[in-house]
Image 1 (cartoon, rainbow, N blue to C red):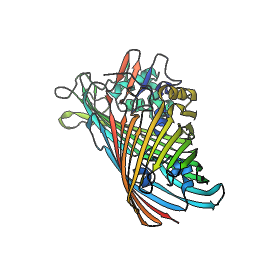
Image 2: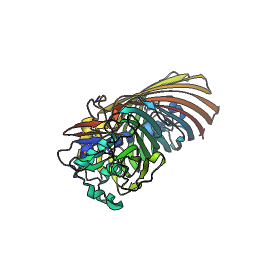
Image 3: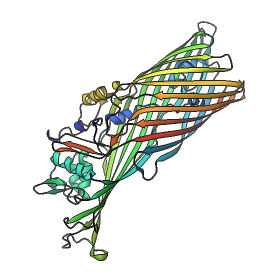
Image 4: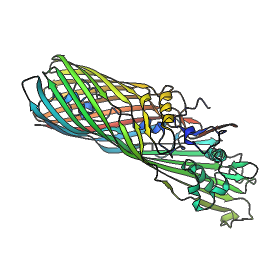
Length: 548
């Protein structure tokens, strides 16, 4: 069942000063949320084909050489030099996200959102007859990435449990039961162990004299069902201030200052049910766990800055060649974390030493709850995203149509942690980036056909390859390894100065296999089965533009 384990969550480093050297690594979808991990930075650094103006969306964003669109500010600002008049536009959109996992569905597997994909304007501030033919200034907003999604699944008849991993974490973390007594104990334990301590407070693990930490409230012959739901909300958006120049109607150059706004709230809901053979009562247990829930929430909020430079060359009227360079986005983010657990247990020992309330048939049951633990001191994470380089070529067939092709290279192995408050060396992060990530290749192709002067039909295709050196490794969380994008649209010129554009796009994202939890210790590996999740997005957008 277990292939290679991709240690992409810095779980070994996350144990920094507390775990003894004999312990190995813990990781998984349900663990390591007390820090910003390399996998988090990987997710937050990606861009999307799906947003911008409706014209750009319907042509897969293949605008490195094309220009003449407000999305150019976020792709190749030299495209602003193509404008001969001012323009203002706004693009509302609807996004319909759907997920599938190679396990039985549970609860919702999708999310629908109304978003603002783009707004902006450009103004012609200089018009001349010399070498500098025109100068345009622009300001706009583009949604760079949509972080609204949900996936949910369940499995049954399992033998492993999150309780096993919690037990091993406490055992190798050197945490004694005396540290965990009373409500004030949370301040005595590092946040990386909060999940395990929540498990202890709800009976998922206990300290057994002579044995150590062990899930003693769960029988050996139990069949376990688990239920997992991940809900993410948020986005990465960019505000662009751009300058584009037209030099002799041959060369177009431009620059953009981009300020990005990042917000993501990610919630993890996890539950286990325990099914005992026979009459459902295990006489070997004093306390018998019936179910447990472990819920977590992480909020990342911050801002970043980058610069973009570009050039477009028009050797003759119908051909355009473009190149653009995007510096890394330097982010400053804060994160908060909270966790909660609850469970239900049955008292099998009828001596009832804890005076648990006895219900029908003389069965004593109790519900155990923990407080909601909050960590709001983990601020000022600083990291930088990949450098991006784009090349494009486009050809116009008179006034009847055009085709545009873009190639983009993104260096994910160049991501860097600049500063972190977790007492982990920045070099530990940076070595992970170098060892596990590589440059990704993106291809965009867009076409436009005008059967009538006031009507344009458009289509586009996009492909993003893997950023992972080993995309077949089982990772701690689902990580993007491939994306396919297709789109179509229509543009109508209502009057010489008013345009209406509609776009529909569909994207599918394949992720790596991942696990819910795993712990590797000298005595062996305890882990959940691996899962595969696939995410699809349908986006419909409408752009209203006014030229003046």
